[in-house]
Length: 112
Image (tube, rainbow, N blue to C red):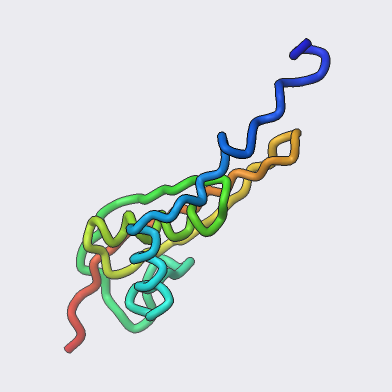
């Protein structure tokens, strides 16, 4: 039957990753307070990059979880900013959306 009618519909519990995570809450607070910059460019205007930690990627069926999960990963590596931020969404034929957020975590030089 799966070949004729497609795969069985996923239950909401299978894809519902909206659970409250302390890391996501902390990341949201840091972002809302303006303590971490996220830019789509290769550099933060007016600041020099000291070092790069590498590419971070976070995916989820819920956009906020993907975005704040990326922020939480940056906090985990003690980054000051995320440069080259991008996001994408994949659409499943059954109507599900899968969000991906990614960027490079960097440490900025100290302000003089």
